[in-house]
Length: 182
Length: 124
Image (cartoon, chains in turn orange, yellow):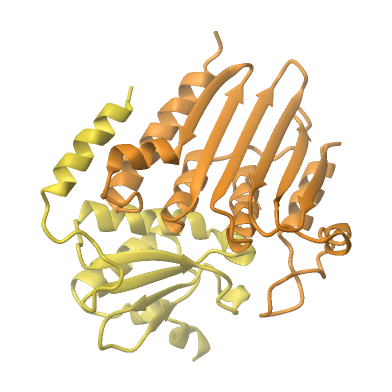
């Protein structure tokens, strides 16, 4: 993966496959603490303890097309390459949360990349799931709540291309605004 | 600066359009993009977004763009499949946003399959 936002896209798809109907994506860029943290939280089916222990093993996967699953192990090694970490908490039947920390100024930290594209990709592919995307840069916050957006849209579907294209611009502008240094 | 009020205006405009996209419509052409780890790492996200943008720009009411998991041929990712009603499925491999836009204009709009991008072309 070239960008952290692509890891996020990949891991959010795990939450989708776990049958979640509410997924939280929280990105926190804190230059003072020299930390980039990413939390992906869902209310999907969760994992039992045995599976959780081995879940970042690339030879552990729920998929049936083949015996490898690279998503979490790739994300974990990207974080660890910067001196960061990846941890997972999960409870069977309740949901899962993935917590990733990158050392912000480490030379091996990938760029965060295009979060607007990642968010709109997961939105357009999953019309029946609500997403709460919270992104902070040094305390300034951008928030996107699909529950709120769906209320505005009424019976017009969020996954319509016209809406998605608008959302890409809306998120891009919102992130630019919070990234500008005061 | 964009605001959610703008979204309301877009909604009202779209509501007045006849024939909003419906997935179950038998006249609908489905474009499916493989979006598992392999696809994402190979560059599926910009391909998907180029497709969505182009379908929106050209206002193609009978075309939907959907995502799927691993199609099973990771070395050929990014892969897209075009399923037009009454026609055989066409599988395009090693896609880029530029190729994807060409698939929309040639295959979807003009009905000419882009043979040079298909999996058949690779295997010859």
